Length: 113
Length: 114
Image (cartoon, rainbow over all chains, first blue to last red; front, side):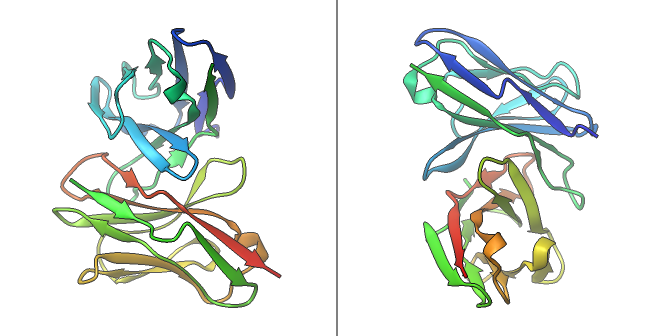
C-alpha cells in the first residue's frame, strides 16, 4: 500500500522558474492538503481540497496554485519561484469525521536560489 | 479564525519521568484536536485525536491527551518517557463546522535524556 506519494524529493530552482510538485494517494480519501514546513514555524497550510474539482486557500496561498481533477492527484504549482518559497513541502490526505487522521507524504525539499 | 499555540519550543525530560507537551487552541465552533509526531527526516505521523466523547484520549506509543474545554487546552502526556520519544510534536486543530482547514502549531521539540 503506497499511501501518499510525493515527487520529487529534492529540487533546486532558480528565481523566476516554475515547477509542479506532484502528490498522489491511493486510499480514496476525499480530503487533500499541501503544507510547507519552515524551521521554528511549524506547518503552514497552503491549499486544501475537499474533493475532485474543489479547492480552497489555506493560511499562505500566495505564489502557489493547485488543481484537483481526480480524487487521487493534487499537484501544487509554483509559477514564479522566489527565495521565500524555500521550504519543505508536505502533501497529506484524510477522511473527515470519526476516521479522521492525516496521512503524510515523505516531503519535498525545495531550494530557490 | 482558528489558531493553535504551543508555548514551549523545547521540553527536556529524563528517561522514565512523566512528560507533558502543552497546546492551547482557539476556534469558534466545536474543536477537532490532533497530535502528530515527526521523527528526524521523516513525515508526520498521527498520534491521537479528540473529536467528541471522553476528555482523556489514548493514542499510539503510550501517549494520551486531555481535552479541557474551559482552559481551551489539549496537552499531550506520557507517564514514563523513553529516549525513543525524542522528536518534534505538533498540535493541530480545526473547527468542527469547517471542512479540511486543519491548522498546525509551530511544534515542540521533545528531548528525552538517558
